[in-house]
Image 1 (cartoon, one colour):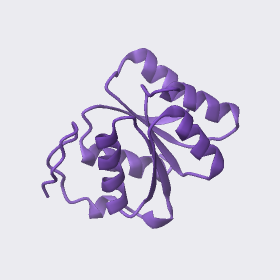
Image 2 (tube, one colour):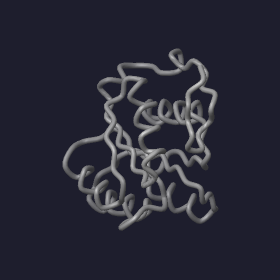
Image 3 (cartoon, helix red, strand yellow):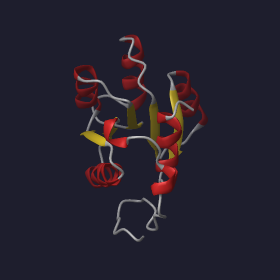
Length: 145
């Protein structure tokens, strides 16, 4: 299947129905990304797979949403306005919220990777992210692995 994506994601998306297990519609995901086009693309892609997906455009908005309702997964960019991804993860952990996280970033340095994983990030994907990689990461994290 070819999707008209113009935001750095892979243009070719394989059929992934067999990759997604369980009842996706009961799983809540929040996408935290300041690039509106990319955030919308991720929202559409995950929504098509049946997930309940919310969006946040900056760190403060994300933290507010994460405090207000339970999420099964946060997909978060490291570089965000007002509060970065690492700071959001730190805040979540200090509040005792152990929400699994997938970090997506254009800045894939070792320090960021180590800090994010120390704070509980299960996956660390470097942009441009192929949708099939995102689907696999979501599936792994939501399956507990």
